Image 1 (tube, rainbow, N blue to C red):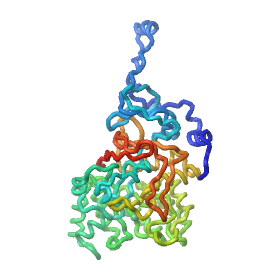
Image 2: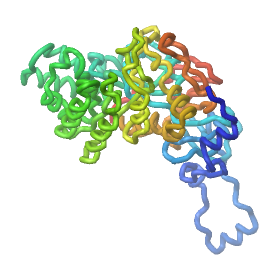
Image 3: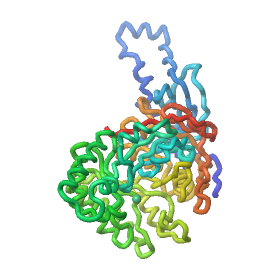
Image 4: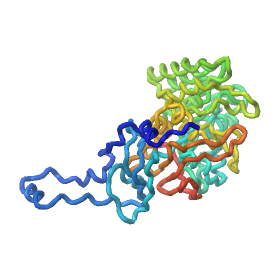
Length: 460
Ligand SMILES: [Zn+2]
């Protein structure tokens, strides 16, 4: 790995912004204590007595002197972050109470916890997984039930869920609906109505939308019209379509066109899952794929996509094949409508077959930010936190600001590194120093604490 001197690294990472730029709008605790515009009598008084020091911020934890990437500002800035209970209470330059536990974040990035909206890890969480492989990537929230494969009952899953290490949410999966009412073949109106009812129930219980995986049996039997009809439920109940398109290699373009047609006709937002142009014959098609996405966005569709940082998919495991190429991945990762998602899966014991479950986020930070400079740190963090939060409609996560839930990642930009590989997929990532989940310390000096502070995430 290329080593960069600290000074060069900082200069590259945050530019001139280290020279004391503060974000006054973030320090709301201080702004509210500003004196009223002075009256004439007060002016005399003010001359005699200096203005009182602002009261120190009351907090449980204070992360001091970090390089803050708040997810909104275009550039990092130096400052502190204060946590009280489950929430962030101050960001910027301020004094704090003497009782606060101090964590020195000097030289470390302080960012919102990452939100992974494309996972298949719901059974792992249900089986009381502590999530250390997830937390050590800086990920504090995961949404499961993607590609059409979900739990049967959203409400039942949440009821049975014990304490989890990270925040978790779900989609209603089309495969589950189709298996229950249709199986293979054509869907009758009655079956469609039954699926619509179940979908509405799941959305009412907090699912973020409908997931489909049109490449998979028996979902391949779905007609475009059938998925549009199901998406009309989303229009009534809220949520979006998370779509693994019908084909991701030779037919990737018409398959994406179908996804766009569904979104436009149903009038619902679309999350185009794990964008890729698989197999060598299709390498180089990514610009056309991205053009289609841009065109759809220009015609009014709320469409975004997600990508993981590997040149091999789960189809390639067990072979030496890399069905994806680096250039296409870079184009996708760089694109403003594309965020990061892992597509990760874990078994009940926390094992996996693809290293992305243990390494996707540190890998993108190491390889595509630190080593290649494809993205700035600020861009990468936005794709890992604020963008997925917006897509999910999570109003209290994804950025660092007072009033937001204290999901926070603190890491060394020179050290953050994935260790999991194709042959050894369950090696934990390194360089994540501190992680907070809902105000509780889940990683302390690089070690998972075992705290189970995760909450259920629901739509709306
Ligand atoms: Zn998929």
